[in-house]
Image 1 (tube, rainbow, N blue to C red):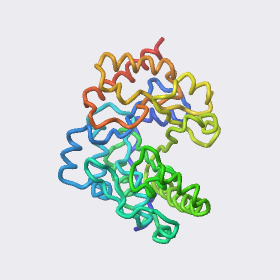
Image 2 (image 1 turned 90 degrees about the vertical axis):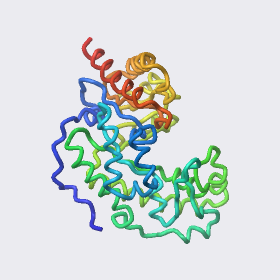
Image 3 (image 1 turned 60 degrees about the vertical axis):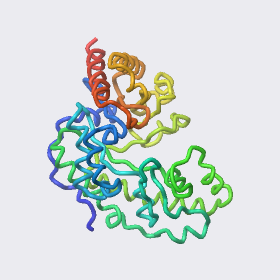
Image 4 (image 1 turned 135 degrees about the vertical axis):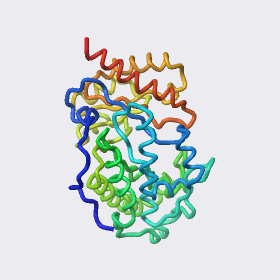
Length: 320
């Protein structure tokens, strides 16, 4: 498969609100999108998944595009995010990963000893191994018809290394942490391999048409991140907005950080929580979102209430 072509004739962008907020430019209202906005809380997504295995959707550009567009058709969101998964990188490295219902991502044969690194591909051509993601991005850019920008993403090398060693998700990361202590040199090699592929993957996403990529989390390093080359830093719901603003000053735009559980409250309470959140972040250099991915139990009507409340309250605050 050939490399993505950045010169593709994409439709003209009609809503650049989130791009302006990311660059620190003035916005008439606060842009909003939702982590995992294309996912299990939507009935239309459940219908598709009933007929298609998870990674089949990821690896089929037309299906990934369709899922990406589902929340855009439902809500007044200011960005789409390509439907994919961080674990496509380990798959590109040669590891088998399945998404098992009720359990989540599961590696058939995880990395348990240093010699297992020999099973990994050393010279990954992302255009060949991950070209389906690039195709999905380009297709989605066209199907969006310029309505909103498209976000790309990738997992951090440590996260991907942990999944590869643990064999799936973990609350303690005990196996992967032990691996770090026991295999220092091999850990560096493994992380560098993942990093190299991830960099190529992110570059490929941009060339294919992704318009914004940002750092998520790491509230303990807000000050350091604000002095990096990132435009936007996303924080989780455990961080107080005013404290985050003090840490980063005006060096970067912030994103976050409503507790995902707050979506389960009444629409009136959601509106009140959103108003408080925006007043603490400020309406400028800010992108509203949840502090983590939306839960499968969320009511789409409450998600709509969240999105609309962001626009309503930020417009009112900017008018005063």
